[in-house]
Amino acid sequence: MSESQNVVVSEAARSIIPNNSSAPPGFISISKKKLLKNLEIINDGERINAWVDSMRASSPTHPKSLPSSISSEQQLSSWIMQHPSALEMFEKITEASGGKQIVIFLDYDGTLSPIVDDPDRAFMSSKMRRTVKKLAKCFPTAIVTGRCLDKVYSFVKLAELYYAGSHGMDIKGPAKGFSRHKRVKQSLLYQPASDYLPMIDEVYRQLLEKTKSTPGVIVENNKFCASVHFRCVDEKVRSVLKEYPRLKLNQGRKVFEIRPMIEWDKGKALEFFFFLLKSS
Image (cartoon, rainbow, N blue to C red; front, side):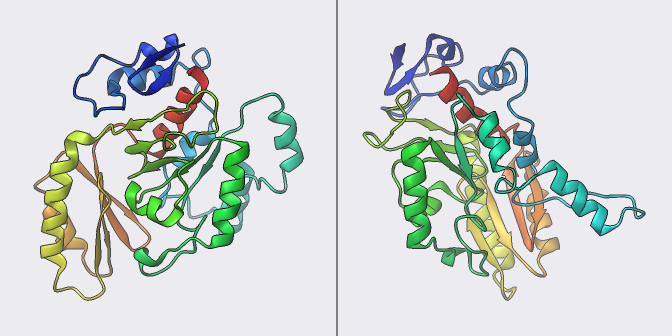
């Protein structure tokens, strides 16, 4: 083991961490190209768990075109087979996890809090907070969300967790002294889209201006992405985005989301955590 800044990493992990003086004091800076390459070769060339890929399509979701001959019941049955209930398959999961490091990944909206019309009121209950706190005492636990990291932390208020905000583009480890995982006891910060911050801020301001006369619109600056909760603002949002070819538009449930056009998402954030916990 060796130390880089305030993060303890193994010799294998150091191959992806360059000597970068631009890193904030107390944190590491990791080469995106090298990290992405290393994430692809973990476990002797095998990808980390196929379910990681399925998470890339979440929040916002993307409706997929399916043959009209496939009924909704068939679609649901197929989805359930690919995403079995952990409660119904608990014994098999327990058997498969024997002797392995278990890591818990949780979304926020709709998982730890109810889905609400006002995103600023998606509060986490005290009971849920106690449950997650107990969980983190047993396993490394991360919250992976499309929300701004600071916003979701203000809801959760648990310093011992790992957080990945802005769809995995803003990663932070447990606060110093709070980590219960023996391999990662010190500070961690990783932001693969940091170059896009000025652009996102500019787009956010333009979106506010373009949509200010439209009733019911909520524009959020999620730091590394911007969200527009909408009803009739399709063309106004697209007109702003035309000026920013390095950004992409995703559409979810009554929400537009503008993100950097980089090879990073929730799935990559999960792989990053796996790499960190496996190679440290």
